Amino acid sequence: MDYYGWMQLLQGAWTTAWISMVSIALGVVIGLVIALIRMAKLPIIDQILGVYVSWARATPLVTLALFIFLSFPSFGINLDKHFSAILCLTLNTSAFNAEIWRNAFLNFSSGQKEAAEALGMRRMTYFRRIMFPQMVVMSLPALVNEMSFLIKGSPAIAVIGVVDLTRVTNRIAAVTYEPLLPILCAGILYMCIIGVLIKLQQMAERKANYLAG
Amino acid sequence: MLNEKIHTGPVETPKTVQETAPVVELPVQYPKSESNAQDIVKVVNLSKQFDGIEVLRDINLTIKKGDVVSILGSSGSGKSTLLRCMNWLEQPERGSIHLGDERIGINPATRKPLKYKELAKIRERIGMVFQSFNLWPHLTVLRNVMEALLHVKKMPKVEAEKIARAQLEKVGMSHKLDSYPSMLSGGQKQRVAIARALAMEPEVLLFDEPTSALDPELVDEVLTVMQSLSKEGYTMVVVTHEMEFARNVSSQVVFLEKGILIEKCPPEKFFTHPDSPRVRQFLKLDGA
Ligand SMILES: Nc1ncnc2c1ncn2[C@@H]1O[C@H](COP(=O)(O)OP(=O)(O)OP(=O)(O)O)[C@@H](O)[C@H]1O
Ligand SMILES: [Mg+2]
Image (cartoon, rainbow over all chains, first blue to last red; front, top):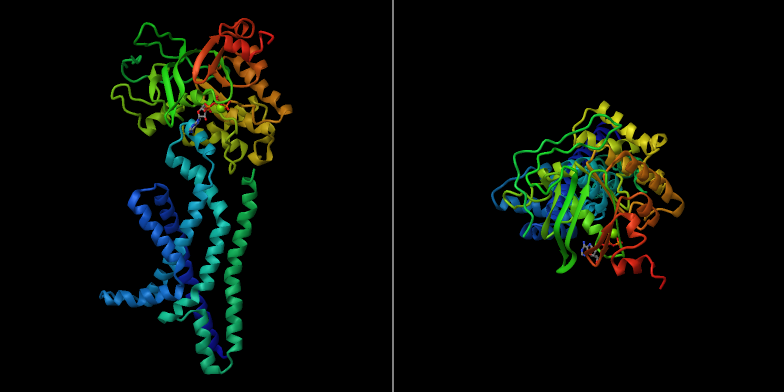
């Protein structure tokens, strides 16, 4: 593998990393917003979101990516492939994250809220200062898990032409005729990216021990 | 039918500054002559239903400044519900509750429920201690007590910390300031919860079975704290099964039976010659 091959590989890694990170960040926030709206139990909106969550969780990423990439042009909208990739990953991960956040809401004891209310604390203050910090720590293992699923599932976006870390190994192999080295390197790079996430999760779990009692 | 009060302008919330005299002086501008400046909490014709079943019926109760009222009664008689109505954690269907000369939960002019922030304002003046402590597990002991001072009273941090330290000292928890609740025993948790309520300088403290979740050997440390509060002149309403506390510490004992207040008298009378046969039976006074 020559210098050009290595550069291509790193570029692929960068593409996977930034598209995943943007999708993860959007997905965590959108998931929270969906969970918040669903906790309010607004009649029709709740059902629509429920259908979305079930649909997005049941659809394979490749199918979703192709669907987005092919359906928008038929409405006369031409999507950038990177944008399509982010849209696809975000739609998918938001649905999973919404369920994780919702679980955290449902499992939260009412006692802490009553204590806050009895002290005259406002709802928003309670959410910001008491509930949300604990929800983050408690949900983080599940969220990180979902993040690593997203990264491992991200090669699906190659079907719409994004040259990600997996796809780029094909291209390198086509020139060098040695497919093993680039795919091995790609595997190691995936491990590095996910390793950072696992580290995060471990830190969160240590913090979560305080909350156990 | 309801004892509606007419309000005359905004009421000033007096605040004491000395830590040695935590009981707040009430404003003396009462609209009705029957009201007394010494009345802190007035419960008038209060009724509350759960799913169509009446759990409180026509409760009338006046709590004076410095009173320690024990609420007794068998399980399911409505003790917790009555206490929780007093700070509107439960909303009664009929009757009214007054703190000083303000009505709790309902705007007396419009007869509509108070806005949440108005309700929150009045709740600041009522402290509550729960059976299950309800400390916030992600905050240290000190932060648990400071939290409402910082984010409800909007105090500067230095001042909030000073008050929190003083209150924790009072309940004997100064040595655990930086511990998290999960590291404490039940008795210690409850003492922190008491300090958290005290820090807000409430005009009345509500306790819902504060020792029922504790191992027997930890009950006394909490009762001792409560007894010292009563000596300092705090106004307290205590739902309890601790007969010793009711007898020795409280100034009034109230007995609830199936949602009805059937006896209210000083402990001397309550424990020796109560009027109600049901209370005599409860206390096994008839030797039966
Ligand atoms: N949230 C609720 N929904 C429906 N019913 C309730 C609710 N809370 C209390 N009840 C019912 O109201 C009645 C009075 O309950 P409450 O908790 O006030 O009794 P208590 O005197 O405090 O009893 P305990 O000594 O067991 O704590 C009981 O029959 C109870 O089942
Ligand atoms: Mg109870």
